[in-house]
Image (cartoon, rainbow, N blue to C red; front, side, top):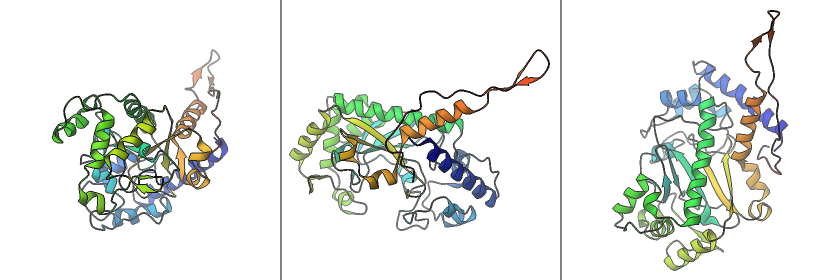
Amino acid sequence: MNIMNFSRQFEEYNDIWKRCMSIGGESDTMTQSEFYKKYITKDQVDFTDVFHRFNLGELFTSSKIVTKMLGNFNCNYVYRQTLNIPDILIYNDENYMVLQPLGEPGRDVQDFKIGHFMIVNYNDENVKCLNEMIPTSFQEKKDLETRHQVLMKAYDALFDNVPANTCGGIVSDKLKSLGLNETTTIREFLAHQIYNMPESVRTQKPGYKLIVRGEDISTDLDKINSEIIRVYDQRLRIYTAIQGPKYCSQLLSHVHAFLYWDGDSQFNDEFYKTYISVDDIITYNNLETQMEPEPEQEQDDGTTLCRQRSVRNPIPRKYSGIV
Protein backbone atom coordinates (compact mmCIF):
# COMPACT_ATOMS: atom_id res chain seq x y z
CA MET A 1 0.00 0.00 0.00
CA ASN A 2 1.36 3.40 -0.98
CA ILE A 3 0.42 5.47 2.06
CA MET A 4 1.30 8.76 0.40
CA ASN A 5 -0.98 8.03 -2.56
CA PHE A 6 -3.79 6.98 -0.24
CA SER A 7 -3.39 10.10 1.86
CA ARG A 8 -3.39 12.35 -1.21
CA GLN A 9 -6.51 10.73 -2.65
CA PHE A 10 -8.42 10.81 0.63
CA GLU A 11 -7.56 14.48 1.12
CA GLU A 12 -8.73 15.32 -2.41
CA TYR A 13 -12.02 13.45 -1.97
CA ASN A 14 -12.47 14.99 1.47
CA ASP A 15 -12.20 18.49 0.01
CA ILE A 16 -14.57 17.65 -2.86
CA TRP A 17 -17.17 16.10 -0.52
CA LYS A 18 -17.16 19.15 1.75
CA ARG A 19 -17.47 21.44 -1.25
CA CYS A 20 -20.35 19.38 -2.67
CA MET A 21 -22.25 19.44 0.62
CA SER A 22 -21.78 23.21 0.95
CA ILE A 23 -22.90 23.81 -2.64
CA GLY A 24 -26.04 21.80 -1.92
CA GLY A 25 -26.83 23.82 1.18
CA GLU A 26 -25.78 21.29 3.82
CA SER A 27 -23.05 21.38 6.46
CA ASP A 28 -19.66 20.27 5.15
CA THR A 29 -19.58 17.83 8.08
CA MET A 30 -22.62 15.93 6.80
CA THR A 31 -21.96 12.18 6.93
CA GLN A 32 -22.71 9.82 4.07
CA SER A 33 -25.36 8.09 6.19
CA GLU A 34 -27.07 11.42 6.86
CA PHE A 35 -26.99 12.24 3.15
CA TYR A 36 -28.48 8.83 2.32
CA LYS A 37 -31.31 9.16 4.79
CA LYS A 38 -32.26 12.63 3.56
CA TYR A 39 -31.73 12.48 -0.20
CA ILE A 40 -31.69 8.92 -1.56
CA THR A 41 -34.93 7.00 -1.78
CA LYS A 42 -35.76 3.44 -2.77
CA ASP A 43 -38.52 4.73 -5.04
CA GLN A 44 -37.87 4.57 -8.78
CA VAL A 45 -37.25 8.29 -9.23
CA ASP A 46 -34.95 10.48 -11.30
CA PHE A 47 -31.88 11.48 -9.26
CA THR A 48 -30.69 14.23 -11.64
CA ASP A 49 -31.88 17.22 -9.60
CA VAL A 50 -30.17 16.06 -6.40
CA PHE A 51 -27.02 15.05 -8.31
CA HIS A 52 -26.79 18.52 -9.88
CA ARG A 53 -27.78 20.40 -6.72
CA PHE A 54 -24.76 18.94 -4.88
CA ASN A 55 -22.51 19.01 -7.97
CA LEU A 56 -21.82 15.30 -7.38
CA GLY A 57 -20.44 15.03 -10.90
CA GLU A 58 -17.24 16.56 -9.49
CA LEU A 59 -16.98 13.55 -7.17
CA PHE A 60 -18.42 10.68 -9.22
CA THR A 61 -16.80 11.20 -12.60
CA SER A 62 -17.46 7.89 -14.36
CA SER A 63 -19.42 7.99 -17.60
CA LYS A 64 -21.27 4.93 -16.25
CA ILE A 65 -23.19 7.13 -13.77
CA VAL A 66 -26.83 7.35 -14.93
CA THR A 67 -29.06 9.67 -12.92
CA LYS A 68 -32.20 9.59 -15.10
CA MET A 69 -34.45 6.53 -15.01
CA LEU A 70 -33.75 4.13 -17.90
CA GLY A 71 -36.57 1.69 -17.35
CA ASN A 72 -35.98 0.59 -13.77
CA PHE A 73 -32.26 1.43 -13.84
CA ASN A 74 -30.18 4.39 -12.66
CA CYS A 75 -27.33 5.11 -10.23
CA ASN A 76 -29.50 4.05 -7.26
CA TYR A 77 -30.50 0.70 -8.78
CA VAL A 78 -28.42 -1.42 -6.38
CA TYR A 79 -29.92 0.41 -3.42
CA ARG A 80 -33.45 -0.33 -4.65
CA GLN A 81 -32.48 -3.95 -5.27
CA THR A 82 -31.81 -4.38 -1.56
CA LEU A 83 -35.61 -4.41 -1.19
CA ASN A 84 -35.72 -7.68 -3.12
CA ILE A 85 -34.38 -11.17 -2.56
CA PRO A 86 -31.31 -11.51 -4.81
CA ASP A 87 -31.43 -13.96 -7.69
CA ILE A 88 -28.23 -15.60 -6.43
CA LEU A 89 -27.96 -15.30 -2.64
CA ILE A 90 -25.57 -17.23 -0.40
CA TYR A 91 -25.44 -15.52 3.00
CA ASN A 92 -27.12 -12.91 5.15
CA ASP A 93 -27.27 -11.54 8.66
CA GLU A 94 -29.42 -8.78 10.16
CA ASN A 95 -27.68 -6.05 8.13
CA TYR A 96 -26.05 -7.51 5.02
CA MET A 97 -26.68 -9.84 2.11
CA VAL A 98 -23.92 -11.61 0.16
CA LEU A 99 -24.94 -12.24 -3.43
CA GLN A 100 -23.54 -12.92 -6.85
CA PRO A 101 -24.04 -9.98 -9.22
CA LEU A 102 -25.97 -10.41 -12.43
CA GLY A 103 -24.44 -9.59 -15.80
CA GLU A 104 -21.17 -11.47 -16.13
CA PRO A 105 -19.73 -12.19 -12.67
CA GLY A 106 -15.95 -12.37 -12.66
CA ARG A 107 -15.72 -10.38 -15.88
CA ASP A 108 -12.70 -8.45 -14.60
CA VAL A 109 -10.65 -11.47 -13.46
CA GLN A 110 -9.06 -14.34 -15.33
CA ASP A 111 -10.39 -17.41 -13.48
CA PHE A 112 -12.63 -18.63 -10.65
CA LYS A 113 -15.45 -16.41 -11.94
CA ILE A 114 -18.04 -18.32 -9.91
CA GLY A 115 -16.12 -17.07 -6.87
CA HIS A 116 -17.15 -13.44 -7.48
CA PHE A 117 -19.62 -12.16 -4.88
CA MET A 118 -20.50 -8.82 -3.38
CA ILE A 119 -22.02 -7.65 -0.12
CA VAL A 120 -24.74 -5.02 0.20
CA ASN A 121 -26.35 -3.34 3.18
CA TYR A 122 -30.11 -3.95 3.22
CA ASN A 123 -31.03 -2.73 6.72
CA ASP A 124 -32.26 0.88 6.59
CA GLU A 125 -31.48 1.28 10.30
CA ASN A 126 -27.79 0.67 9.61
CA VAL A 127 -25.26 3.25 8.39
CA LYS A 128 -24.92 3.72 4.61
CA CYS A 129 -22.01 4.70 2.40
CA LEU A 130 -21.87 5.96 -1.16
CA ASN A 131 -18.17 5.15 -1.43
CA GLU A 132 -15.41 4.45 1.11
CA MET A 133 -12.89 6.76 -0.58
CA ILE A 134 -14.91 9.81 0.45
CA PRO A 135 -15.06 10.87 4.13
CA THR A 136 -16.51 8.25 6.46
CA SER A 137 -17.55 8.60 10.09
CA PHE A 138 -16.19 6.31 12.79
CA GLN A 139 -19.35 4.17 12.56
CA GLU A 140 -19.06 3.98 8.77
CA LYS A 141 -15.42 2.89 9.02
CA LYS A 142 -16.37 0.14 11.47
CA ASP A 143 -19.23 -0.90 9.20
CA LEU A 144 -16.74 -1.56 6.39
CA GLU A 145 -14.72 -3.80 8.71
CA THR A 146 -17.89 -5.69 9.65
CA ARG A 147 -18.89 -6.17 6.01
CA HIS A 148 -15.43 -7.55 5.32
CA GLN A 149 -15.83 -10.04 8.18
CA VAL A 150 -19.27 -11.14 6.95
CA LEU A 151 -17.84 -11.78 3.48
CA MET A 152 -15.23 -14.07 5.04
CA LYS A 153 -18.01 -16.01 6.79
CA ALA A 154 -19.87 -16.41 3.49
CA TYR A 155 -16.81 -17.85 1.77
CA ASP A 156 -16.11 -20.15 4.71
CA ALA A 157 -19.65 -21.48 4.31
CA LEU A 158 -18.92 -22.31 0.66
CA PHE A 159 -15.49 -23.80 1.39
CA ASP A 160 -16.96 -25.97 4.16
CA ASN A 161 -20.20 -26.65 2.22
CA VAL A 162 -22.44 -26.12 5.24
CA PRO A 163 -26.23 -26.58 5.18
CA ALA A 164 -27.80 -23.62 3.40
CA ASN A 165 -30.33 -23.09 6.19
CA THR A 166 -27.45 -22.09 8.52
CA CYS A 167 -26.46 -19.19 6.25
CA GLY A 168 -29.07 -16.70 7.41
CA GLY A 169 -32.81 -16.19 7.74
CA ILE A 170 -33.32 -14.79 4.24
CA VAL A 171 -31.31 -17.66 2.76
CA SER A 172 -33.40 -20.15 4.74
CA ASP A 173 -36.65 -18.51 3.58
CA LYS A 174 -35.54 -18.59 -0.05
CA LEU A 175 -34.53 -22.24 0.34
CA LYS A 176 -38.07 -23.05 1.43
CA SER A 177 -39.68 -20.90 -1.27
CA LEU A 178 -37.76 -22.86 -3.92
CA GLY A 179 -39.03 -26.14 -2.48
CA LEU A 180 -35.58 -27.34 -1.41
CA ASN A 181 -35.22 -29.51 1.68
CA GLU A 182 -33.38 -28.64 4.87
CA THR A 183 -30.41 -30.86 4.04
CA THR A 184 -29.54 -28.83 0.94
CA THR A 185 -25.96 -27.59 1.17
CA ILE A 186 -24.91 -24.07 0.29
CA ARG A 187 -23.12 -25.30 -2.84
CA GLU A 188 -26.25 -27.14 -4.00
CA PHE A 189 -28.25 -24.00 -3.28
CA LEU A 190 -25.83 -21.90 -5.35
CA ALA A 191 -26.02 -24.33 -8.29
CA HIS A 192 -29.82 -24.50 -8.08
CA GLN A 193 -30.18 -20.71 -8.21
CA ILE A 194 -27.91 -20.38 -11.23
CA TYR A 195 -29.42 -23.27 -13.19
CA ASN A 196 -33.06 -22.44 -12.39
CA MET A 197 -32.77 -18.70 -12.95
CA PRO A 198 -35.93 -17.47 -14.74
CA GLU A 199 -35.28 -16.98 -18.43
CA SER A 200 -36.60 -13.43 -18.19
CA VAL A 201 -33.79 -12.62 -15.71
CA ARG A 202 -31.16 -14.54 -17.66
CA THR A 203 -31.84 -12.82 -20.99
CA GLN A 204 -33.00 -9.30 -20.11
CA LYS A 205 -30.58 -6.53 -19.14
CA PRO A 206 -28.26 -6.98 -17.29
CA GLY A 207 -28.81 -10.71 -17.90
CA TYR A 208 -26.56 -13.46 -16.59
CA LYS A 209 -23.63 -15.41 -18.03
CA LEU A 210 -21.22 -17.64 -16.14
CA ILE A 211 -18.15 -17.86 -18.35
CA VAL A 212 -15.68 -20.73 -17.90
CA ARG A 213 -12.90 -21.08 -20.49
CA GLY A 214 -14.85 -18.95 -22.92
CA GLU A 215 -18.15 -20.86 -22.56
CA ASP A 216 -21.33 -19.79 -20.77
CA ILE A 217 -22.14 -22.77 -18.53
CA SER A 218 -25.08 -21.20 -16.68
CA THR A 219 -27.67 -23.55 -18.26
CA ASP A 220 -25.66 -26.77 -17.82
CA LEU A 221 -26.15 -28.14 -14.29
CA ASP A 222 -23.37 -30.74 -14.56
CA LYS A 223 -20.84 -28.11 -15.62
CA ILE A 224 -22.03 -25.72 -12.89
CA ASN A 225 -21.52 -28.40 -10.25
CA SER A 226 -18.11 -29.36 -11.66
CA GLU A 227 -17.00 -25.72 -11.54
CA ILE A 228 -18.24 -25.32 -7.96
CA ILE A 229 -16.24 -28.38 -6.91
CA ARG A 230 -13.13 -27.18 -8.79
CA VAL A 231 -13.25 -23.75 -7.17
CA TYR A 232 -14.52 -24.40 -3.65
CA ASP A 233 -12.69 -27.65 -2.92
CA GLN A 234 -9.59 -25.46 -2.87
CA ARG A 235 -8.94 -23.09 0.00
CA LEU A 236 -8.38 -20.12 -2.26
CA ARG A 237 -7.36 -16.63 -1.17
CA ILE A 238 -9.98 -13.87 -1.04
CA TYR A 239 -9.48 -10.36 -2.43
CA THR A 240 -12.03 -7.74 -1.40
CA ALA A 241 -12.29 -4.43 -3.21
CA ILE A 242 -14.43 -1.46 -4.13
CA GLN A 243 -14.45 0.69 -7.23
CA GLY A 244 -13.54 4.27 -6.40
CA PRO A 245 -15.56 7.37 -7.38
CA LYS A 246 -13.76 7.53 -10.74
CA TYR A 247 -15.09 4.15 -11.82
CA CYS A 248 -18.23 3.17 -9.90
CA SER A 249 -21.68 3.37 -11.48
CA GLN A 250 -23.77 2.95 -8.32
CA LEU A 251 -24.17 5.25 -5.33
CA LEU A 252 -24.53 2.50 -2.75
CA SER A 253 -21.24 1.02 -1.64
CA HIS A 254 -21.00 -2.63 -2.63
CA VAL A 255 -17.84 -4.50 -1.73
CA HIS A 256 -16.71 -7.02 -4.36
CA ALA A 257 -14.84 -10.20 -3.49
CA PHE A 258 -12.82 -12.45 -5.79
CA LEU A 259 -10.95 -15.72 -5.32
CA TYR A 260 -7.36 -16.28 -6.44
CA TRP A 261 -4.22 -18.33 -5.95
CA ASP A 262 -1.75 -16.00 -7.57
CA GLY A 263 -2.60 -12.31 -7.85
CA ASP A 264 -0.41 -11.64 -10.89
CA SER A 265 -2.17 -14.29 -12.98
CA GLN A 266 -5.69 -13.48 -11.73
CA PHE A 267 -5.66 -9.66 -11.72
CA ASN A 268 -4.22 -7.52 -14.52
CA ASP A 269 -3.08 -3.90 -14.39
CA GLU A 270 -6.47 -2.65 -15.55
CA PHE A 271 -8.11 -4.45 -12.62
CA TYR A 272 -5.80 -2.76 -10.12
CA LYS A 273 -6.47 0.58 -11.80
CA THR A 274 -10.22 0.16 -11.34
CA TYR A 275 -10.49 -1.65 -7.99
CA ILE A 276 -9.20 -0.51 -4.59
CA SER A 277 -8.31 -3.06 -1.93
CA VAL A 278 -10.65 -3.02 1.09
CA ASP A 279 -7.80 -4.37 3.22
CA ASP A 280 -5.79 -1.30 2.25
CA ILE A 281 -8.66 1.07 3.04
CA ILE A 282 -9.18 -0.53 6.46
CA THR A 283 -5.45 -0.44 7.16
CA TYR A 284 -5.25 3.22 6.15
CA ASN A 285 -8.30 4.11 8.26
CA ASN A 286 -6.68 2.46 11.27
CA LEU A 287 -3.36 4.22 10.64
CA GLU A 288 -5.17 7.52 10.32
CA THR A 289 -6.98 6.90 13.60
CA GLN A 290 -3.68 6.08 15.32
CA MET A 291 -2.21 9.34 14.02
CA GLU A 292 -5.00 11.46 15.52
CA PRO A 293 -3.93 13.39 18.63
CA GLU A 294 -4.91 11.80 21.91
CA PRO A 295 -7.10 13.90 24.22
CA GLU A 296 -5.20 16.68 25.93
CA GLN A 297 -4.02 15.93 29.44
CA GLU A 298 -3.30 18.57 32.07
CA GLN A 299 0.18 18.44 33.59
CA ASP A 300 1.22 19.34 37.11
CA ASP A 301 2.24 22.85 36.04
CA GLY A 302 -1.23 23.53 34.62
CA THR A 303 -0.20 23.25 30.97
CA THR A 304 -1.68 20.69 28.62
CA LEU A 305 0.10 17.87 26.86
CA CYS A 306 -1.11 16.50 23.53
CA ARG A 307 0.39 13.16 22.51
CA GLN A 308 0.38 11.71 19.03
CA ARG A 309 -0.45 8.06 18.57
CA SER A 310 2.33 5.96 17.08
CA VAL A 311 1.97 4.03 13.84
CA ARG A 312 3.25 0.46 13.78
CA ASN A 313 3.54 -2.21 11.11
CA PRO A 314 1.86 -0.69 8.06
CA ILE A 315 0.89 -3.50 5.69
CA PRO A 316 2.77 -3.26 2.38
CA ARG A 317 0.99 -4.12 -0.87
CA LYS A 318 2.17 -4.38 -4.43
CA TYR A 319 -0.89 -2.59 -5.73
CA SER A 320 -3.08 -0.06 -3.99
CA GLY A 321 -5.67 0.65 -6.67
CA ILE A 322 -4.87 4.35 -6.32
CA VAL A 323 -4.10 6.14 -9.58
